[in-house]
Length: 479
Image (cartoon, rainbow, N blue to C red; front, side, top):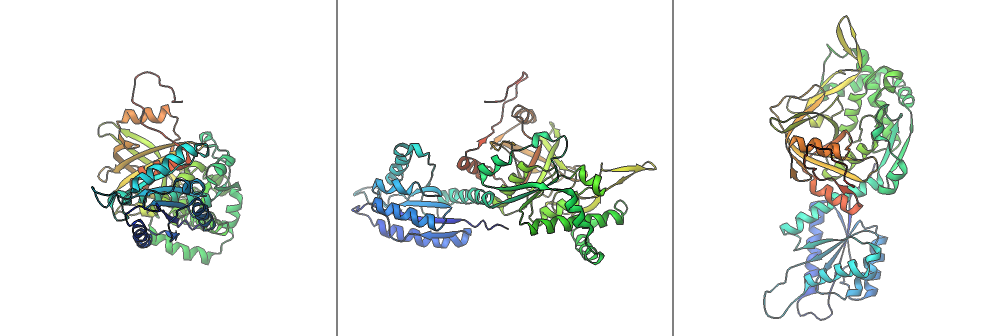
């Protein structure tokens, strides 16, 4: 699986005769960044001697490219020679321009550091405008609030970008029938993010693998499963539990053998036709193990979940938006049973039967397959869904309402809703989703990742959807 530890490049640029100790300032910056790399878990590649000439800039670019740097920080220890940036700005990484405050507020100007940032940024934007080079500004020393706030956001966003470049997605079975809104062109995905995808694996491949495990392996895995959650034996038969374990092992082993970071699984109806079982519980266990597993072979959702997992080093899940309550401005996020164990509140997880895959026998429901039944634990959530052209991001945040009971399966009521940082009403939410034709699957992660997703979108060139104010008349999709 992937290694998404970021490689940050650091270089300084100085003026040949500013009166301040610009080289001493840069030496201190190097020391501070060496400490910060351990605190924030990134690798650092440093050029110890500050740049003074265009040739220095060219050599720095070659050094960073050779070291496969992900993010190049160009520190303006003083006002640099402008031509330093001409070759360096075309480094094969993202760029940060960085300055610090003046050491004095009067008398002889010591560094002119911010002017350096200003000048290099304007050279990139004007002289090099045909290259369309983005950069992010930084200001202050590495221990200051402003620097750390901006730098941490960048690390998370770039970790997601790097994760997608390295990610491998496997598709099992066809797109679920009737989910045509999730149809994608895999070539666009690969061009946009560099992500590898193979959609030609079959449900039959997994079922054949599942049937090949001996009973001793099944028995051993059952012990693990019963520690993860309660087996509701009144609803889940031994035969269903046996099939659940076999599919769970088959999917996990298949992902590991093929080095897949995500499996987009056609969870119905093919698995029911071939194996007479719902595979939700197995997908829950995949997600818990860090292998992204969205429902209905939803590739855009897999991409969003990979982004989430890289940003917050946590485990995301996939939900539908199934209920809306105008009385307390809340929504319910639900799916039939793929949420990982780590999402459960203090009541934990139950391995129960599927609520609508199965049949009635003597007026009593018999679900086929095992789901992960749980209620969300407390916390702030971020919802993010990408359209199937990989151009637009819908971002929503909210808080889990721990005292409001949800639905069977994986469910939680969420209030304090915001779309891209702006508070909204239920009507505005419905309007925004409908006017923008937002896909009905909603990847969800714990934590507020609004800033990180906005930075991710700006580096990649995606559009962020803002709230569309409610009106009683027809509103067309924004161009």
